[in-house]
Image (cartoon, rainbow, N blue to C red; front, side, top):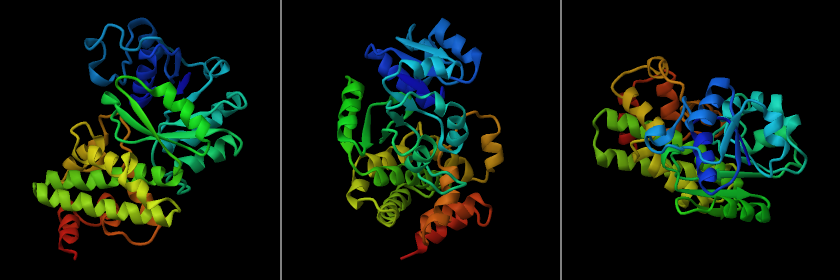
Length: 320
């Protein structure tokens, strides 16, 4: 197995597969990161769960490289863990190296800001319509991956992936609804930013619960508009992922909202971090994709500086 992208989720998935005894090659950009993984068993930039302090062999069976051609040459599966906003550029450099017929499994969620494409559309655009594709979504923080939802047009491919991923600490289920899973994975990050702002402003648990509930309603409507199945929203990739992202202390998007609420700027929040906050780009792109939804549009207005977090949340709470 090859994993493209040495961020927190790519590292975590390599760890999950490595613990099963699968030989994994993690493709990273920096030689220093590759050396750290190969020599010390830790990713110096992203090491969920405390890195070496948790285990002397944090990445068993995993080798890292900056050579994508070598990593892809013998791979039976390639996991794509590059954030959606950087996917097109990343694949432009390596897509020609992927052997014909090898499935690509996306671990990334979101909507490409420039094109308003879902991740499935971006990958098909970059890799061609003949490439077998699958997507993993659901409530799975990088540092405590436990459960996920596999979606693919090819049920046989999905079954192979579920067997590959199954372990004592990870369970994968199947959904045929690629659109519903993809939309849920993008929208839940926007809702999490709003929930974090609610918490940051001290508006209370009741207000936060009401906001998240309304957000899931907007998610369901958006899934239908985009051609997905509304029932998908009530599964792991919808409300399951939303609850984890809105209420989990490890949620980066929730943390962004908690800091935005009291008045911090995005520039200040992002400045010291190399992490990717998946909710910010879709917060701005989703309103361009569909008609008016109060929470989705409200978060976009706050991020664009048109209204303050308090004004935005008060308007939402006052709506019938």
